[in-house]
Image 1 (cartoon, rainbow, N blue to C red):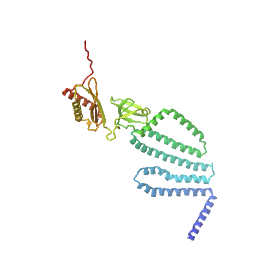
Image 2: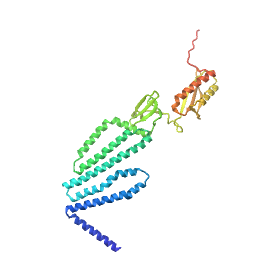
Image 3: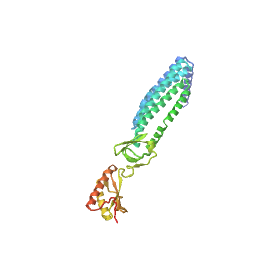
Image 4: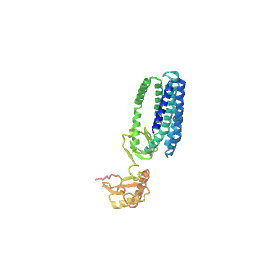
Length: 364
């Protein structure tokens, strides 16, 4: 044990003395040692990256880490060499000399460019993955904000790389940063209205008041949601007209959604109608005929809350309220048409009067 300790101390002393000798050696010796160590370090790191690290990443079933490793591969291949070159020229040559600026500074610039390129590729590859999952969950078309996020991220990455490069050469970037800040404020004020729309669209993405295909009534418009953007929502009406409503306005409107009223079957819908018959009609017979019609209708479904009630006794007749359910709210108009036509036919066959407004005039 003592021999091992003594051997380690001797080796440390030898390395320390060797390093001191190199420190006072000729510049070309120092340069050779520095570059040689940089090459050796680069080889070792690449062996680790292509060996144990790559095997560890390959064991994972997730492909995202493989794609991330591929983006970092150029930086792994030459990053150590560039860092070593930069440190070597900073160590061998005085600050501000041509070799230090040309080779040391050039290594820094190249390292920053490769790092920025690596981060830019990661942004381009991974941001669409994030937005695709968010788009599926929210039913909002986020392609616009996705492209905007990619563009803004790339601007930030490359701007940071340029600023760091200028700063490395002792260039004052304070004025550039101040100008960029003022420009950002001006652009922000100009896009204030659009920004409020973006915020409203983002809130809708989390609140999810509707999705594509839902039938809604909003802002006096009844129709089907065809597209949900970050700034506006498109609704196709029954008259085959496309209505574009800004999301900023939707945030303050009451929305009636046919598709989300029932959690068991989102597509079913309550169909309610009021029907007036003559005063001489038997309520029991009227209820029986209407119930038979509802049972025979192909659009209606059996529901616990289906009922026909005598709602009111008016001067002109008896008022009934019909409550039934249809399995698909898209068939509302067809269901109503079939039921009303059948009521007219069967009431006429049973001599049940359907009164209409009339005025009696008598002469004294």
